[in-house]
Image 1 (cartoon, helix red, strand yellow):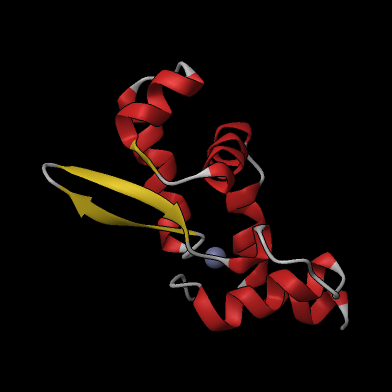
Image 2 (cartoon, helix red, strand yellow):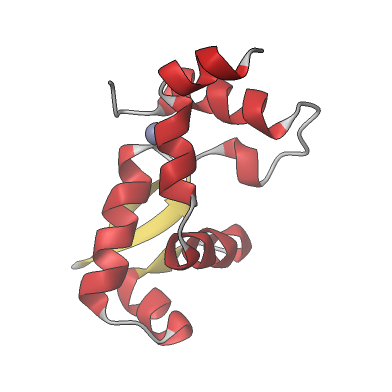
Length: 106
Ligand SMILES: [Zn+2]
């Protein structure tokens, strides 16, 4: 895959979303198991507004999603690129993710 085509495609947006310490921390935490916003705040020692905003961005790319658990939302990793053993280079894996799952269109 050519880099020029990647930059025109949505995959670049997905990389931007991943390029953030808090969002990466959230993904790493959710690899272990699904969590509510409150649990993520406690674990990462960050304010709810920051964590909620990060989760909303991850959800736009369909990296995460949530299911309702009583009054709370429990977030889980939706994208397989963090959990499956990939047999592809990272750029191709992200591009495939973008085409199949990302909601952001440019
Ligand atoms: Zn995306």
